[in-house]
Length: 246
Image (tube, rainbow, N blue to C red):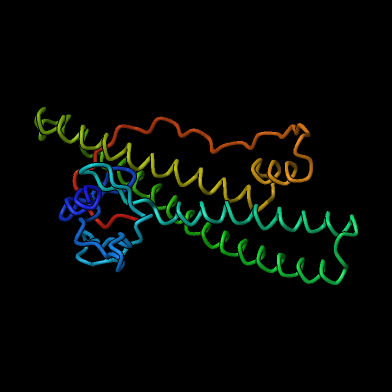
């Protein structure tokens, strides 16, 4: 009951994304007939209401964080693709050892192959969505770069006093960190999905080889992670506009 009470106390509390931006607030909960939490109703900043699964939110005391649906979908795909791949490899081993008939092998292999192809199509669609989000981050960074130039100019000629300048500078830095964090996060997620699709992921190789020879030691070349972003220029974000990208 205490856990239920704690979650109910989050009604009306702000919901933030993983990068600290407030995107809405908790409006209500949906419970099963047995009293288990099933979903959360969120009122987003644009006034729209949406019913979100519980797994898409993280509750930490009074803080409520919305987990990116893109990352949730990526996590599922990065689990499912290696699993189907591994099953197909195990099926091939059974066929080579004459433990199943060629007919059964072909039937199951065709099924696994069809599922794998669909998962890869879903992964490609998600990769394109992530690429759009990365482009959006780049556009925001570019806009902020222009904003800093104008701020510096007006401050230099004395139209903006020191207090206002420092306040805008602090606001900018916080916003800039969030955008860069989101871009880096999306690039890493995109890289992981790409490696899974290409079959170059250490997770896939390790799972397949451990299934075939659990005792064997496997040397796997590490996958290059997304390059670390350079330190961005000092820019100013005067007014937060638009809705949060989820």
